[in-house]
Length: 118
Image (cartoon, rainbow, N blue to C red):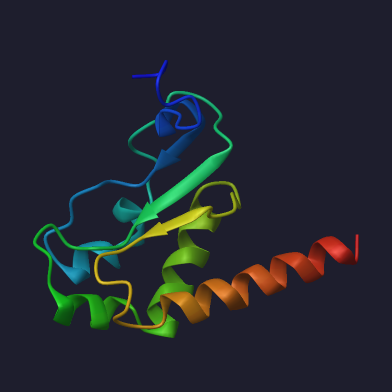
């Protein structure tokens, strides 16, 4: 209810995300399909989120998908495939499995340094 939750907005009014359901880690790493703008893709939006989890939650798959190399590869490829659009959010199951916090920190530091040199 927008009248009671004035600070919470409908994400798809402001953002777009990749497809929501992937059956396997291989489906996620198929960038041609997994990096497409999907939900919320009706126009230019400020935020871009990538879904990085399988349909059925699995801590084992989360560890496999949460390696530093896998995360950087997916983020870089999804950004490049979508006009170098920056990735605002990486949605995962089991955020404590893998290296998402570290990768996020590294990427945020890089963005900050680029902005400070402009």
